[in-house]
Amino acid sequence: MYTIQTFNKISEKGLCRLPRQEYQVGPDQQDADAILVRSQVLSSANLNPNLKAVARAGAGVNNIPVEEYTKQGVVVFNTPGANANAVKELVLCGMLLASRGIVQGIEWVNQQDPGTDYAALNKLMEAQKANFKGGELAGKTIGVIGLGAIGALVAEAAIHLGMRVLGYDPAITVDAAWRLANQVEKQENLNSLISRSDFVTLHLPAIEATKNLIDGKIINYFKSGAVLLNYSRDAIVDTSAVLEGLDNGRLGCYVTDFPMPSLLKHPKAILMPHIGASTDEAEDNCAIMAADQLRGFLEHGNIRNSVNFPALTLERSGAAVARLAVVNQNVPGMLGQVLSILANRGINVVDMLSKSRGDIAYNLIDLAGAPTAETLAEIRAIEQVVKAWTL
Ligand code: MLT
Image (cartoon, rainbow, N blue to C red; front, top):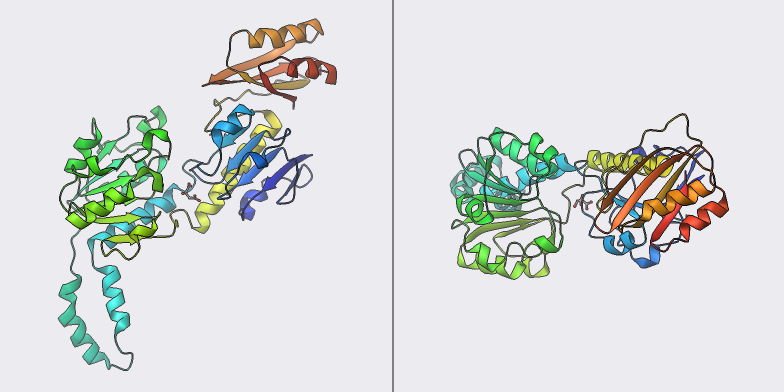
């Protein structure tokens, strides 16, 4: 029986991927094998010696202390792309809200007296509507910074809206490059993208390298009156620099899903309460993907979409009676030590796969004989072995 502790409300469509006869799932599970989480901020208090994985139903993992969990051999999964369509749709909405007097127009209409007769209201509206005039998206240029699942969808939608699309992503993966519409014009650096764009949209993870990426210096490169959209994370943007840009006219509008208090009520800020992925479809997709990834890992040791461990899939071979998973520090000679313990115990290796990422290495070893508790204890006793278990 596997145990999974859940935090936050996880969609039933995801939870039902974990069969009740094999999985105990819920908020009260203690010392669980894995955690399934949405926005709850995790800490070292949520670690237990048995914990092997955390799956975040969402893309960002800034609510998980990834570095600390990595040291403890805990695999952290996310669900890239599962909520990308929801975010893309809100980015399009943000661009429309920034371009047209939609919010102001709606507010004005609602301020009118409900007792007004229609003819009078209509006359008033016709007289006022020039105040809510805007511009069209077609023909404008959008710069997409970060071309992962969300950035690629935003780029494609913008092309369909008749926009010119510039893209910048120094860390683009081969898969992401394949997904990208060929009309996206690659930019060599941020400045060239920003200085040519009427809209700049951010689709990056909040990591050390992206902290305050949009700072006072880079805001000087924006076209006068350009719109900045941030549906990524607050930490990527220096809010005080944005406020200065809004006030001096360099920025025409800041649309964000991560409003800092200093932005509240600013006439040029469009602020949303982190609802980019808040759709039924996105919540279902994220929960399904997170649950499937946890199952693949807990039952077979396979890793797909981890932010801290290497991707690894080893097909089950009929000749093996047990599979051994070993997480160790990424130093020379580790695999040799594990294999020699197995050899000394007369256990033959049927198949194996070993991969590393940063300071951590992960091995799946299929065996012709099941290792005893004693053998496992010997493997775990190797100094640089972080975790070892059979599955
Ligand atoms: C994400 O990280 O996937 C989005 O920001 C949505 C969320 O946090 O739930």
